[in-house]
Each structure stands twice: as C-alpha cells, then as structure tokens.
Amino acid sequence: MTKPLENPGEITVVIPCRDEAEALPEVLAAIPPGYHALVVDNGSTDATAAVAWGNGATVVSEVTPGYGAAVQAGIAAARTELVAVLDGDGSMDPGELPALVELMRDGADLAVGRRVPVSTGVWPWHARLGNQVIAWRLRRRYGLPVHDIAAMRVARRSALLALGPLHTRSGYPLELLVGAAGAGWRIVERDITYRPRAGGVSKVSGSWRGSVHATRDFLAVLR
Image (cartoon, rainbow, N blue to C red; front, top):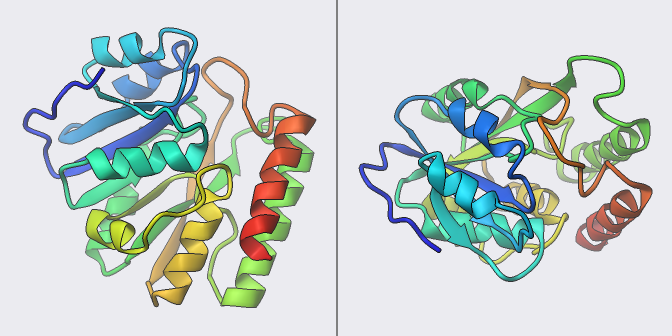
C-alpha cells in the first residue's frame, strides 16, 4: 500500500517501522510543519500501515526484513533532497529535527543525533555499553567525531544513494558512518533527548537476543 507524496515540502522524514501502531500517532503528530512523514512498513503484523496512512503519512512497504532494508526503501521513495531518519517508537522527538537540518545548512554532510537519556532506565545498560564501545572504535579507527551510532540523522538523498546498498539489518547506521568517513563527509553530532518508548517493545535493546543480533551485525561491518 503506497500513498503518493503530495506537496512533499523540503524534507522527508523516513520512519522505518515494524509493529509500531501504538507509538506512531504520537510520532506523526510531532513531525514539524513543512516536513513530510514517510513510513516504511517492514513486515508489521499489527495496524502500523493503516495507522500511518490515517495520520497523513506516505506509506511504503518493504518485504525484506531488517532496519537497513526499511531505511533504504524509504530513501529510495523520497522525493526531496534532504532526508531525515528516526525511529517510529517515540523514543526520539521529531521536534528536534530542525536543529539537525540547520547543521546541514551550515555545511554538514551528515547531521546526527547523540542520544541523551531523560531518565534512568530509558537506555538499558547493556545496549548503552555496546553503543559506547562501537562509537569508540569509530573514533579510533575512522577518526569520526561521534559518540552514538546516529539513530536520528539528516543527509542529502543524492549522497546517501551514491554510497550504494548498505547493511540491510541493524548494521546499517554503522555502515553509513563508515561509508561517510570513506567518502570524506563532514559529520556533525548534536545532543538529542532519548526518552521512553511511546508503546511496544524494542526489537534491539528490549531483549538480550535482539542485542546479540545487533552486535553480530555491528561486528560484521567492522570486521
């Protein structure tokens, strides 16, 4: 089910989703004026697509499972030069996207959000520790000025497409940063709030199994 873009404005917000019907209304209601939401339904078994459609978003279906596959399908479907990406679980505030867009207008090639938890328990310790280790390796090995793996980001669609197909699962944000480093992009990081999910359970940090799978994907990228 695909709803065509109408007056898409200057920025498309790609929101990869699998079973996020509970959280999506809050996320879509917070999309800034002039930004167009594009929800990629990645094999949901709930009403994710219908909820997104009913709340004014463009809906694209991606049958290949995985976060990276969903993000790349959204980028391919976008019709604006600037593309933002954030999760559909409500843990990040779409209202903070304009600050990242300003970094792009100031000369960044990739503007990324560094998650700052609003309270204890928002970010499970095992997931946070893994993120810190990965970010340390990115700084040490590639000289990237990052402390997070870019869960919220803004970049130019043409530049993203030029990097070619990237990791189809959890390794996508990491491989994006590695590819950006290789392409000589200017990457700028800015703090963003990280808050409890608006609904549902995290596919990665919400379980040891999800965290193990994500770690395996990260290591495949950094091999």
